[in-house]
Image 1 (tube, rainbow, N blue to C red):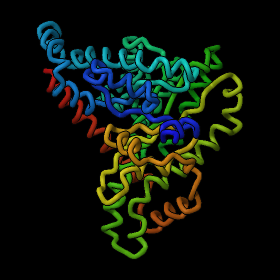
Image 2 (spheres, rainbow, N blue to C red; image 1 turned 180 degrees about the vertical axis):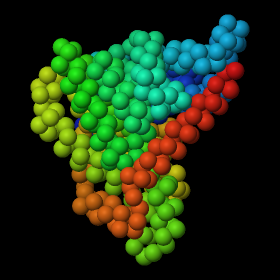
Image 3 (cartoon, rainbow, N blue to C red; image 1 turned 180 degrees about the horizontal axis):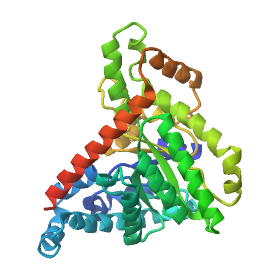
Length: 360
């Protein structure tokens, strides 16, 4: 019987690991996952690196040296993170080559302190891209208004990007427009659009965490059945929008020049509510040209009892009805998305501060 991971690949979805540590690299665990076809990319964030660097013995010798030679904690963190990302990129390189640059990426995030500064984000993206110096690195940029502008300019310059902290269709539309605008600028300047990669990361479980609380507060018979359905419904509608945009007339000329569509990436896919299925944000969102980045616990759950089937197009009318019902109940989905994005930036800022404290 084919593994669920092999079945996912046949459908066209990639599984990425939402974790990275030097211990994984040194033990061979990451290479094992790659060789088994269980992970074809990696995402990182400040919280992941904080956990790795504050508890991992593999960092202590280098950190002691850096404390003596590098006075800036941010540069200490970056030096260690860049080395890890370089090694992870090298581990993923066979996937990158085998897929013609469609898969096999590792993400490294710009400082969340720059989330509302387009110029500083662009400068950081340039610097990190040059420092990692791997074709298969994605620079993570938050999907704020300012982040969208930095993203557009990165794409125009040929810097591949993972746009993070997306929670609504409107936020996604802004990012898709920035991507296509950046590609158009690159093409007009004579640049190669075929070597640029971008993904758009929707944070799934956080959507339900917020909207379930609002539905509980509403407390009506119409509200109760909507609990646990908001995120997947938004994901299904987002995918329909993705198909429309990247099979539409504006992208057609770019596609003809070799440009790649901006795949949707499902993030924050571990289930926060123990009453929900542990694969709630995995199994209903399987479709071609999508990515699901999962923490170790969700990867293990999918390995153990996951079912791979083409599901992303199932239940679209029901998803539309669920979102319409949320709006009828007074839940403004775009306003909720704005709140979640603002809170998401703040959480990353807090994790980044804790990370820098850990390497101080």
